[in-house]
Image 1 (cartoon, rainbow, N blue to C red):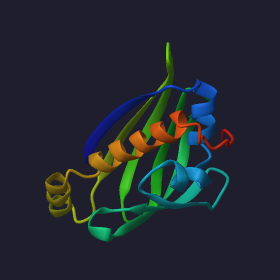
Image 2 (image 1 turned 60 degrees about the vertical axis):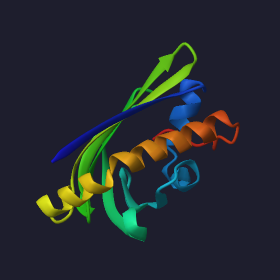
Image 3 (image 1 turned 90 degrees about the horizontal axis):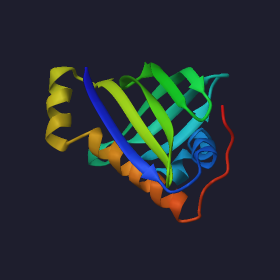
Length: 148
């Protein structure tokens, strides 16, 4: 498994950042690479994600920890990619720091890991998604959602 960690400081209040990020159905508008998220159970969602080379990958994810306005953790329960991780939300003097930590296993084992390393994925995509989310939140186009 490989590990990736990325943080972004968003100039918006913690509650606003939490509410927007945890409204999973709105992820396609808030991030660059999420195509679709559908609920399939009380704490489970189905994700379609834009992959390199014009491909998409799909997986089901289950929330494992939910500490409102602090931490949200998940694990995949099926699909093309195996991963788990946490989002951490921290207040800062200028807003909120959002940190994503993810541990993942690429499809095709070592071959998939080599291709991912060559393409700088999924780290590049996580960075793009957090940057896009920051732009949306700071640009006043925040989507009002609800905490899980």
